Amino acid sequence: MATTLSTRGLNIPAHDNITLVPSAAPSDGDQVITYLKEGSVVAVLTVTYVGGNVSAVVRSAS
Image 1 (cartoon, rainbow, N blue to C red):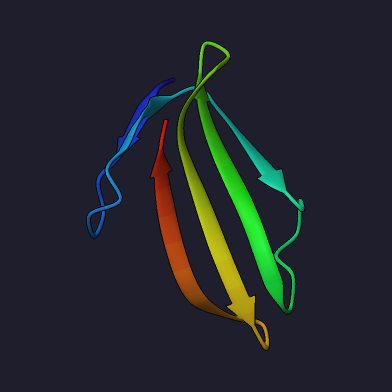
Image 2 (cartoon, rainbow, N blue to C red; image 1 turned 90 degrees about the horizontal axis):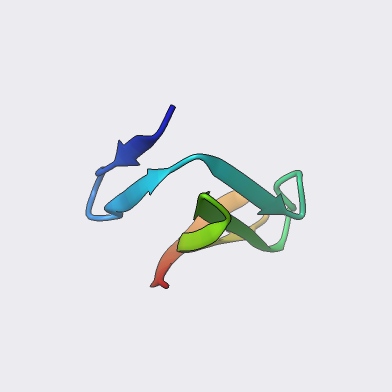
């Protein structure tokens, strides 16, 4: 089921798969969340953590 996420300006397009690298959120550093639709990247979020807390979220358009 494709969904659209439009929360706080992220505007993630409809997608049918998500990959997370690394698969678990780190205490410090980045986690990259890639949204795909039929194998093509539709959006990428980079979530930065400091001390286990989210310090930044950046959306990249594809």
